[in-house]
Image (cartoon, rainbow, N blue to C red; front, top):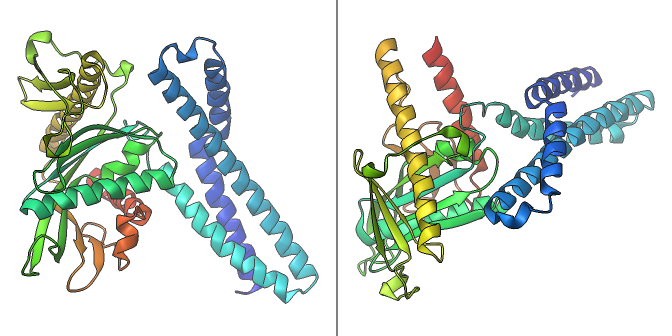
Length: 372
């Protein structure tokens, strides 16, 4: 890359950063940090542990967001100075270092740009994720557990707090279903592109003849409800059943009827909760998730009405959105974005940012196409 090309690339990256900064608004982040810092300093903060954890998490992420912006600004400024010095000194080694740093800065800016695409109504929310085993018997239940581990490892990579809310174990191995909450800003916007049907192809470890099996699991992602959403549910529309929490093999993990199953009678939506120690806590948690699912249902109904008015717009996700193939070759491929990798072990170990970023960009293209 010639020195003139490097200078042009630096100007282009600086322009991209300016656009990102306009969207993320560092001044607004500073104001948010100041407000949250005051709230966290309140002596009564931990009277409500759940709210306290939420506020401290929001403060931590806001501080990290501002630090990332400021670090990138300094990085680009330093890179410009280094380039000028290399040109003035006719230093080939320094120019090589500039080219290397330029590539790294370009990749970092691409990651930051993804955040600017998360501007949907609920994209900033925490996420509630449910994984359900589908067709495929014990292999599907095992696949559901593999997906749970994948998402938990992804959250761990980003230091996102996760809380498992409800688990239903399969009889032989794996999970019938599991619901967990990811408590991080933009968790919903990021993970929402993971919603859909996932397919696994492999030699089944449960088949004594060593045959290849195909199994399926469904992933549902909804935004966590907030007090400002005002999703009121009439008491007559809710049926509540209580039962004892249990672990694998039916082993009792509680000696009281603390687990709660909440059914929304008009829609048939069912939410189970058994993570908390008391029935009151589980009831509150189940009600919150039920509100979130009703909020998503309301959005879907509104979107369907808009689609009907606008005509047939080809922007559906489709039933099967990603394939994980472990035999006869190894590959994970997203069928919407065509993003694929051959290192399947890394994917199941939580390395899914490439799929999430590609999904977010794909969704934005679909939205733009639908708007034209």
